[in-house]
Length: 197
View (cartoon, rainbow, N blue to C red):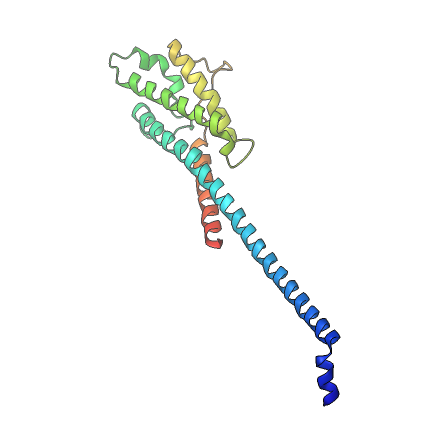
């Protein structure tokens, strides 16, 4: 028993044991710190992704959606009942001369509002296009840029566009669906990220 007590009182033994315990504590502390750093890094990544999606929704998709909703409501006041934008059933670009020749100013004011909204949409695409959730942008959005320019130009000229000309670009099918699909996708991602944070 005495020999056993001497072993524990030996300064070399206590130094070695203290070093082992200290090393184990340092290793455990480093491991805990590493896990803590990984968790903090993952939270930071999640927050950055949340911020990015929130920016996409608030700075691009929501304004685009609201402007298109206004434009569609105005277009429905001009179009034949039951017509759908982009379907080819009724295109404003084909009725410029007819609307400009009307005695009443009502439909001309509607067209001016639509052209103003189109200008805002073009502005949004040009200035905030980097917030799109895909690159290159969906084809309907690219065609819309050409359509908006053609409609504005020929409205100012007061003439219909000859369908055979390259400047003839009808409103593209799929603009609203593309925007709505992206909003749903981004909102779903937002929910997933929020639930894991």
